[in-house]
Length: 99
Image (cartoon, rainbow, N blue to C red; front, side):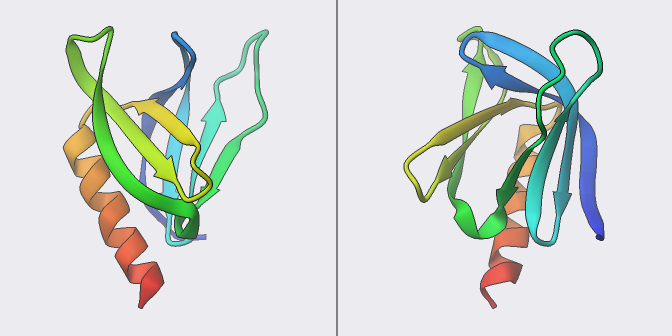
């Protein structure tokens, strides 16, 4: 599986940010939680299921949030270092999947 982008990130669980690794491939976006007492099952989202990618501000002031709007109507939120480049990478990868 070819990795297009990978970086440490956090997945928002309500108001709690859970640390882990965010990985973008040609087929999906996966988030794997870091070790510890609260290790969760990885979250993998097919690029075909992503309808829109937008931003949010964590703590309502820090511009580091990325929101995925899924075709199912669900939302998934990640905190990343460079949300603009993540959005661009996701948009490019989803365009590639539709060709």
